Length: 544
Ligand code: G1P
Ligand code: ZN
Image (cartoon, rainbow, N blue to C red):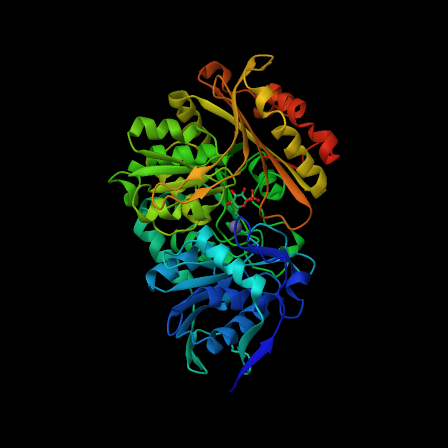
């Protein structure tokens, strides 16, 4: 087996976004495209020689081909050992857990998360560091810098490795271990949650659940945990077979793309509990019978009830949420007297806080929650957390959320996404809002008066790094907010996200429909940003 050095030229579009490099499969299939980015990762890791890496992906189209290429390149770049998921599959949370458990140097995760898959879908690659979390900006910047100057890459000439069985192989001087991550992931969950209690809840037959894996990566994990270990009846996990194109669906667990689960939970005789995960298993949507749990509320409820759960009963050091996530959890942190942090969008900003034990639980409005057990968000972790809370409290999901609102008040919250709009129009919209920064302050819109407007920036309290331009905030005097951001994960045109939030302490007014409660703010957002004009759209693509 010989190492081949291949001459190449830089691609000018390999800047990692909110979560790694995400592009259409056809972009990744261009000669040298994946290789350039992979070599740039290796080039940015100075002391890689002899180290252990973890490698796997969400099973989408191109996962297997990419893994074979990366294995051969790793061998040619003197990596010592690679732990690779069986059939090339590792959910993102499992990858994080495996990196930590094996004290690996880092990991390469192949996923485009909630973006559609298949030959006409998206693919993605991201690097995680030794804490198991997404590389912080200084690392992704270094990788990006290498992509701009790369002239050659190294690859071992060899046959493909068989990934269909657990086992050990040699590739050149590099050791390869094909591992099944379901068992270690299940064991980690068992160490955090009271499985006996949950088994009691699920196996008695009077509490039924439905878990939708959307033909994505969580199927095997969910089957083993809910049907295997926790005694839920066969068929509890639906769409459980991971498919390269997710069965043609959009593996994003929200009210639009997981509509078939929503229909099940809102039907007569619906199950008591429903949940869905995304392509790579780090997101979750929680539903009760005829009841949707807003992800921002889910984070608040999880935090407020953490003392009931085995792995967290000794208390939390703090909680962190991304800036656009609602302020519901802020009130819980205040009551508990624990640290509270507001970070930019993207899980990579939580890593330092978790490593420094300043925060125990983190969450984002985009259906992501997790804790210090790993350094990624974790969809099934959130599902188990909810089931554990339900099992202890003996109340329905709806009762638990409503009593939370009663105690803390309700943060009405919604996100409106305008997907795949023209990039030019989206940039003009942002500039249009920015041009009003000076005049908006103090301006009155009906019942709302603007307190201040800014571009969110964040100084990491642990390493002092500064991140700017993380979303435009329009904050009103009663703390209601409208936030505008452009997505950093989309691959076609631009996606505008408008986040809307108001607060209602009065219990008698908390049952209002969310969109009705936010109507005035929705109109103000249109007045300020001229969304219809700049996006050329009458309504959002997705409303959460
Ligand atoms: C989106 C979410 C963000 C999440 C990211 C990766 O990023 O909004 O919270 O961390 O996906 O799952 P965005 O497309 O908004 O940049
Ligand atoms: Zn994801």
